[in-house]
Image (cartoon, rainbow, N blue to C red; front, top):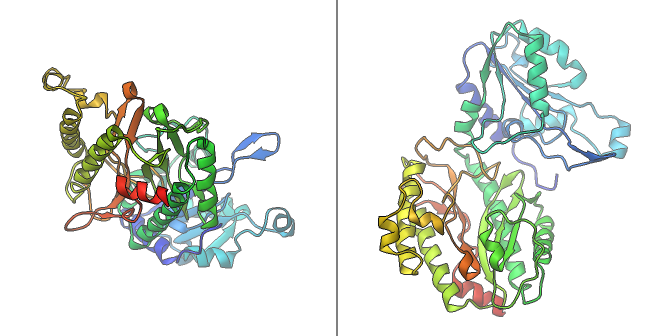
Length: 430
């Protein structure tokens, strides 16, 4: 991994939080992700399942974590099962975790090789009543591929049908949504790398560059700063492309007078950042572009102030919508009649601002969190309002990442990233 080692204390704390919410006489099992095939002998780059990483720090394929706090044998209360390395693997793929390095990474003393897992689990299953299994219950999930975790659960339930099976997700959705200070520091590192990428391209953009060339500049800056890469597929959307919310082709030439919407974030140590900025191809915003940009910025700043403990996401979104409504009136995009005659289920402002304002962020860009429960200190949210005007050939979105505090306004993890029209224009003129 490119990122620097993470103190195992973080993962020890995370396991303690999970254990505190387990039922008595239960064990929990977590699997790594597969390495997914493309075709022939080619594969996609490995990406670790965020839950096993969150609980152990292990960032390696074919890994299994077992947590059994009431195990009769103390050494079986936390177990890692790992693929045993050998000389051939070391030559062809590089060194894998040893038992010693796995302990240093995770703080878990008991490490077995995978070939021992069946016999060890048989012993553990004679001693427990309940088993926590881990299925994907994220509100945006749409899984069509059978995962390693899903295969394991199907086989395990058939092998041990007499046990009670419980869900780990209700626990993880809550504990993962509130970040430890060490996690905030890792997200901040990802944000700082994203800042470096933006500053790099501000001196690169000019009429005639291609969207994919800008993507390449981000890639260069991210990788040279130890990023895992992009936290999500980058959106480099010039001109009217910005009106396509998830435009990822990044294959158009940037023309004089256009704006480029950059929805880009670096990932560091599996933790995400999520930034959106607007860059004028010619180095300056037109008066209309500036007018709309400043309206979106005012909405973002007002929305961010509402990220306080106790806030309910749906109420927050409705309030942001009404702030946006006033800005759209001022821009001449809505009339009072539009608002008077709106469908309550699809307010008038949705014509120009059709997506949510904020989502949880952390190990996943759209991170764990239960939107129907009140916001808490330590949660990290994006704030990303936008105004999209197809009839005028451009769209504007601005996005920063915030940490909710016990008291006062949230901390902006992207406060050092240029954001005002004057800042962006000045840097592009250098």
